[in-house]
Image (cartoon, rainbow, N blue to C red; front, side):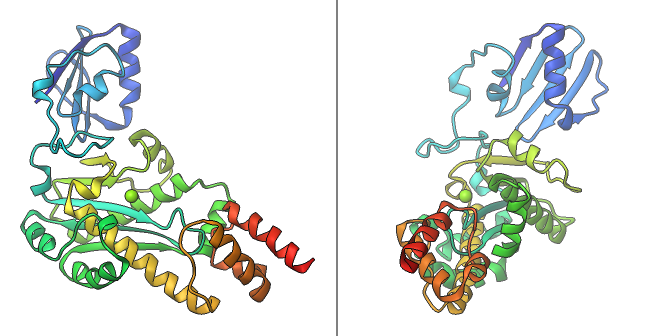
Length: 316
Ligand code: MG
């Protein structure tokens, strides 16, 4: 357990207090003037001006307020072969009961944004691994479509599909993709926690697309915000099978929706946002009109204007 103590001025202490206001907890110990509990670090401010950071995230948090020298031998990572950004995970994390979440479709011009959250309790980890669930980047779409129903039958999960009409509507109101994603993740996690109750995961792991502070700023106006034991990491699908499973379900629902849209458009919709997409968008625009194209695309992408140029050229 990493334990870091800083001696801070009154002003710096206030800075600590306001930084962790939303993580504040009551601690009625002698000399304690403020305490906060983050998923991977506990912060305690003492009347003496000493501030203690305790837990695997101690170094990260303490270094925001003062110079930290830590004995590196006590802060080894869970899996030294993967370099990730985000929270330092507890020892033996991969064997814990974890609720994981991931999204897909955010970089694709056609089709929805989908977010999935999956709870894999420790006693189901082996079963899920035996299905072949792993980093979705190592699996083909066909395999993921086959796997998804089994994952859904075994694990408590939630899948949210934000279709293009709704996406374009809220994007038009000024919601950034980060905000849209954060809202969907929060909602999916909440759904799964509700379904699992009273059982609780040891931790929640979000495949990191934004820093913790940014994530929570995005969803600060939501009625219910999932905060307890939430960890963030990039490449999270390699860190726990729950995130790998979530990634597969998100992909599954994206592909399913893409198939429906392809039928309506009369063409196999191109994934991504490349020049091929521009050409396809232009063809669809000419054939089915602007409103139809809008209803199957993320309209604010640069592809729309590129397609417009192609359409105008065609029309001479
Ligand atoms: Mg992701």
